[in-house]
Image (tube, rainbow over all chains, first blue to last red; front, side, top):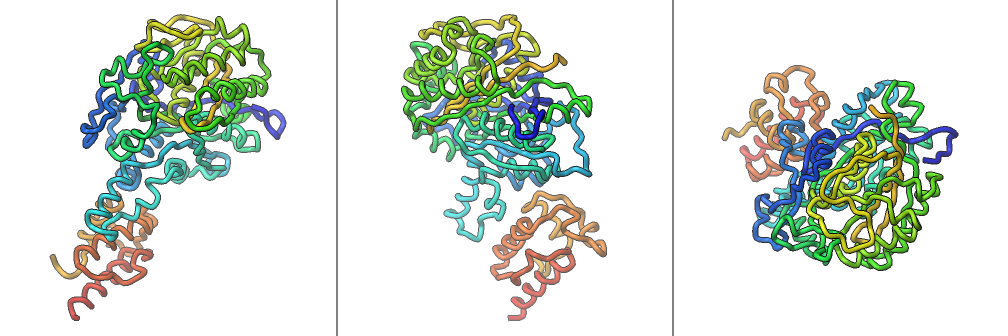
Length: 413
Length: 86
C-alpha cells in the first residue's frame, strides 16, 4: 500500500493458519477448496447447557505438542493459537530474523475479546477461594494485547508492536496498520488475529448478540444470503501472516505471495445493518482508490456474509453500489460458512484463503449454502477454476466496523 | 511438609505456577539466575502466593523480586522460620 518512504510496499511472504478446518495453510486450503463444513455441536467442557449449540472448534491442535509449557501456564488459548500461527507464518516465509536488527520486525494482532477462558478460571478462584488464590498471570493473559506481547517477546521482535481492537473488521485493519509500519521503515511485521471464544463465560457474553445463531443443526446454523439465514455460528482460530517490505523480501530471495494493495475502513454503529450498506460501499471505494484499480479488475470477493437477512441485503447492495455493473458478474464466495466466524480471526482466514485461491487459480465454494436469495454470483457447491489476479476481502463487526482489503497476486510459488 | 523450602520443592512450584521446568540441581548451581531460566517476577509472585496459602503466613515482601534461587530460598525460609519460632 502507499507509503511515506518512496518505494516501500507491503507484501505477504508467509501464511500461518490455525483454523477449524485445518492447521497449517496446506490443510486449511485443501478443506476450503473442497468446501468441507466442519461446523459441529460444541464439545467443550462446561458448554453443554448453553443455548449456543453450533460452532467451529479447532480440533486438530494439541497445545501440549506445539506450545512451550511456560506459555500453557501463562497464556490463554487465544494466544496459543496466535503463537502457533505466527510460528507457521515465519516458517512458511523461510524467514530468519537477523539478531543484529531486532527493531526491523514488528508484531500486530487484532483481538475481539482477549483471554476469556483463562480469565474465567482465575475469576472462579477469586470468588471460590479469595483474592490470594488468583494467579499473577491473570494480569496479562486475559488482555487484548497478550498475543502481540508474547509473540514479540518470544521471537525477539522489537519493532513497532500493536494490537488493534476495532471489532471483527480489526483483522483487516491490523493488516493496514502493519502495512503502514512497513511504509515507515519496518522491514517485516508478523500480523494477524486468532480468537478462542468457545468457553462458558465467553459464550455467555456472546448470547447478548442478536445476530448469533442458536440453531441446533450444524448444516442449517449459518446460511448467509439464503432465505433460511438465521444468524452466524462463531468459531475459534485465525491466521497470522508475515508481511514484508517488497524490496527487503526480494533481497533475501523470498517469494512474494501477494501484495496488500488497498484498504478502507468505516464505522456505521452497532447492529445497524441497513446503514452498513453505505459504510461498506465507502470502505470498498477507499480500498479500490488506494489500490488504484477499477471495479472490473476485482476477480473475486470474499464476503463478510453475516447470515442476518438485513445484513446480507446490505452487503449485496454495497457491492452493487461500489462496483457498479461489475458487481453483477464478479464471483463472490464465503468459505467461512464451513468453519463459522472466528471474530477478528475470520477476515484473516479469508485473507489467507484469498492468497491461496489466487495462487491455485481456484474459487473456493460457500459450504452448506445452495439457494441464494440476493443478487450475487455466489460460488456454491464445488470449487471452480478461475484466473484470479485481484481479490477483495470484506469484513464487518457486530459493533459497526466495516473494512475492505484489496489483495493482488504475487508470484506463483 | 517440612518448614523449610528445598530446591526440589521450589522446582516443583516453579513448574506448577510458571510452567518452567528446571532441575533442582540447576537451581542449586552457584550463580544460577532466574532470568537465565526464563522465570519472571510474575512467576515468582505465583510461587510466593502458593507458599503463603499453604503455610498461612506472609512471605517477606520482595521475595518475588529475588534474582537468584539462593536469595529466594533465603527470604522464604527466613519467613517460615520466623513463623515457626513465633
